[in-house]
Amino acid sequence: DAGITQSPRHKVTETGTPVTLRCHQTENHRYMYWYRQDPGHGLRLIHYSYGVKDTDKGEVSDGYSVSRSKTEDFLLTLESATSSQTSVYFCAISESQDSDTQYFGPGTRLTVL
Amino acid sequence: ILNVEQSPQSLHVQEGDSTNFTCSFPSSNFYALHWYRWETAKSPEALFVMTLNGDEKKKGRISATLNTKEGYSYLYIKGSQPEDSATYLCAFDSYGQNFVFGPGTRLSVLP
Image 1 (cartoon, rainbow over the protein chains, first blue to last red):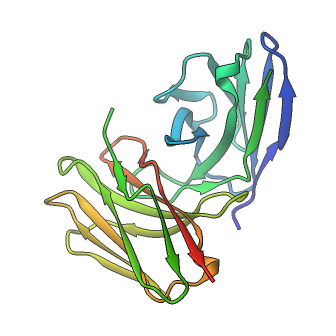
Image 2 (spheres, each protein chain N blue to C red):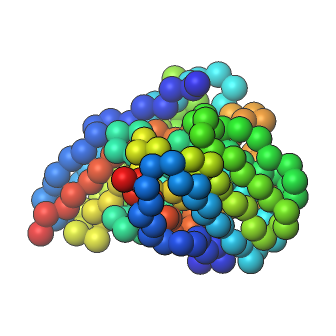
């Protein structure tokens, strides 16, 4: 299994509070991704990173920000959580962008009350 | 936003049945098509990466075919077993773009 961990694995928070999710990898892969998984939608890309301090938006980036200060860590922040951000969040990594398999972390279940 | 579709949305089969499902994707700007297997409460695991029109891949009882000209891929499971129960995702990979995942096909194999 690719060395990817996510923390926390579960979190319950209240509307309006900030939340940060962490993805940590030990594979030294260049690309890292944050997805959310919702029923009927499969996996939707929130943000991705193609190197330290290099990030870009995905399909559903509104309300989220990311940071990558080290190769191994990719943080996802909800500045002010809303109930619509209740979801399961998956981090993924890949060596390159094109034609390269993405490996997924175990997921974080976030509930915003 | 590119549209990647999968059908059926879900299906139930008996143990021992063979089954197949479809991933449809844009036929232009194709680079690769990825299949993932996703068990409940786990993370998606890569099954196949398919890059060439006419590609066929096989892993045990699971196989996949690819038609890039018409924009579809089939995943086949021969002699389904309860441990095959999972959601099967496809992801469309185009040049210089990120993956676009389909919504998945949820397979339940009844003993």
